[in-house]
Each structure stands twice: as C-alpha cells, then as structure tokens.
Length: 550
Image (cartoon, rainbow, N blue to C red; front, side):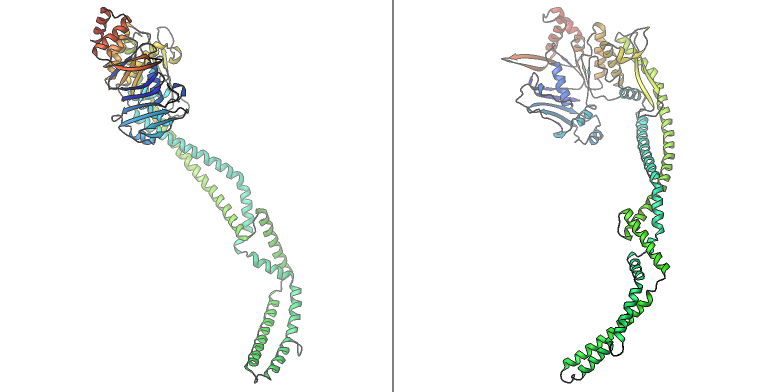
C-alpha cells in the first residue's frame, strides 16, 4: 500500500507531503485545483517519461518520492527477478535536474525506468475515466478468468512447458539449418577427405621422400663422383692414403727429437683412419642409391600430388594436411551425429506438443466452465449500476497453433442495450459504461486476489443519484480488501470514504501553489455540502451532507 508521497518543485506544487492509510480514501477538490497534478507526479515516480516542463522552478531539482508498505505482497521473487534490493518498506524516487537529466531510484539504488515500470504492476493501478487499456488487454482478460477459475497454477505450468517447447523448437530449427549447410558442403568435404586419405599421410615423411627423389634423380653423377673420390683416396702411390702413409714415415724419422712430432704422427694416423671410413661410407651409399626408373617416377608423382594438395589448401607441411584431414573427418562424423540429434529433438517435440495440447484443452474447458457464472455475477453489478440491459461476453476462441495463453484468443464483447448485437467493448462502450464495467470487474477480482493499490480517477463521472450511491458502496466494499483511492466530484462517493483529502490551490503573491489537506469530520460536512450546493453553504446542503456521511 502507498504510505506517503513527497513532491517538490512539480507543476503547481512547491513542497507537498501526504501520508495515506489502508482502506478507502477519497480525494476531492475543484476543477483545476491540482488533482491531475497529484496523479501526474505519482505516474512520474512510477516510471513515466520525464518532461522538464513539469518543473515549477526550472533552476531547481524536481523530486517525487513514494513510500510503499509491501510486507504483505510477497514480492521478494519479483525484486530478485528485477535485480532490485528488497525492503518491506520500499521507496521509489524520481529526480529531474535543470539540465533535463532524469534519474530513478528504488530503495536508494539507481535503476532503469523499465525496472520501475515492471515493478509498478505490483504496486499501483490507476484507472482514468473511460479507460479501456485493461478490458481490451487479452492478458488481463485471461488472468481475470484464470483467477476466478482457480487455475493459475495450471496456467503457470503450461506456460513453463510452452516456453521449454519453444526453446526446443528453436534448437531444432537451428540444427536443421546446420544440417542443410553441412549437406551442401558434404560432397565437397568427402572429395577432399578421400584425396587426403589417398596420400596415406601418416606413413609419408616429406623430407625423406624429397631426399630420396633427389638421390634418384642424381644417381649417375653421384656414382661418378664416388668412383673418382675413391680412386683419389686409394690409388697406388698417388692416392691420398699412400700419401698420408709417406708423410707419417717422414715425421716418424724425427719423432725422437720432440714429443710434438710423435703427436703429429698420431694425428696423421687418425686422418688415415677417417679417410678410410669416408671411402667405405661412399661405397655403401653408392650401393643404396641404385633406384629403378619406375621408383623414381613413383616418388616424383607422389611429391607432385603432395605439392598440388598443399598449394590447394594453402599449407606447407604434411602435418597441416593431417590436421585438415582430421578436421574434415570430424565434421562428417558431426553431421552423422547431427542427424541423430535432429531425430531425437523431433521425437521430443512431438511428445511435448501432445502434452501441451492436452493441457491447453483442459485450461480451455476450465475457462469455459467458469465463464457463465462469471458473466452472471457481473450482470448483478451491472443491474445495480443502472445497466440492467447490459450484456458482457468473454469470447474465447481456440487458435490453430499453440500460444502462451493456452492456444486461445480472447476478447470481451459488450452491449449496453437490449436488441443491440454484442461487439468489442472498446468500440461500443461509452465512457460512463466503461467505468461501470471496469468497476464491476475489479469488484469481482478483489474477492479472489490481493490487488495492488487501486486509484480511480473520476470513475463516477456521468452518473448521479442512486447509481452514484451504489457505485460508492461498491468502492467501499472493495476497499475492505486493500487500499483504494477515488478522485471524485460526487458527494455520494466522497461521503463513503474512510479518509477524505482535499486538493486546493492558493495564490501567494505572484505565485499559485497546490496543497493537500486532511479533512476532519466537520470539514468533511462542509466540503460535501459544497459539492452538493456549490459555494453557498445552505442548511439543507449541510443536512444532506450529514445524511450521506451517516
């Protein structure tokens, strides 16, 4: 419930503070006194877009602050969902700076307007005279029916299952797109993969193959060079080995002179041994490079194919081709797994849809079952509010496809007079008729659900006499189950309020300000008498006011 409202530097209000209680509060005042300003300020703190024009003094900050007692509302989960700090006494504040910058706060934490607007749904409902925004709203209509039918739990389960079904459907469609793309690429990927597999890359050493090819291509030159070198090493008398032997013999002749010559002789022996080993290695190598022409052709063709594939894929090593082969292989395996996953989701979607359709049918039957009783109860209120011939029909139509409402489309059809066909209420109901229908719906609603603070802005406009008195009684009955405000010009409504506040404006020098005043018993008599007889307070008007109050 709204506990208090603080308004500073807003329109005709310089500094206004008002406190409120549970139950029925009426707010009266002459036209232009500022009742709409009060509602405008409340709308602002509840998330309406800011306009710098509302600032009374454009050089000072505008502040609107509303305090709510929400301890009985059970809104902890709502605050958690909106990422707000919960407090049983919640404070909403809105500030507009001279620069035009606007900021919103919930419990002193800065928040976005979307968060405040969402929170507003649980705190305050404001109904202006002639409003249709609720009655023509499909979500409101179904929530109303579901509340009376007592199936909110079933609706909540259906919507959770429907959301899960939608997510699964989205996942299925995504996989279908992936499969389509994979199938488009599959033939090409298979061709590339077969090409890579044919190279037998795991057994192929590119560096070794290139060296073998080079040896085979140059084996004649290698053979000639080896033979020449072998002759130079081992030729009698002139070969390198004989020459080294002769050199060693000469150095040995002076070995006794110094140990240095002994070491030199030993080094020459080492050279002879190394040279002999080189000669043996050359001869061995010569025997190992005797390639047949067919083998050389095979190596050249294999390397040509390897080079072609590397150029094709923009790589330079065998390992990169192996990585590509493995990736393509995995992609093709994934495509196969994709098919299995698609089939699995397809079966799940069929099962989920069957269950949803069953739930939707049960919801529809429950809704249809309660509607006759609901329409009959509303007809009683219509009769009391002098709409005896009015007919209202909750029209539920099953849709071809499932939706979040249980596979139905809802509308409210209305006729205020006998013999006139039912038509959409927003198109045929007058302002006064809409007010009375709205009040009737809310009166039934409050019997079943804790509603937020209700504010009716001149809902009684266009009615009088016994109808006005009956409407006031209905408002009073509704307030027993929550906090209700009514801004009114009717004395019948004003007299039914448990609390009475008066909005008025006064001129002080060059400025006009709006104020709010709590009226005591005597002041209420005078205020209601004025509403009855105008500014001339006659004894009969006062007597009538006392009669209404009693």
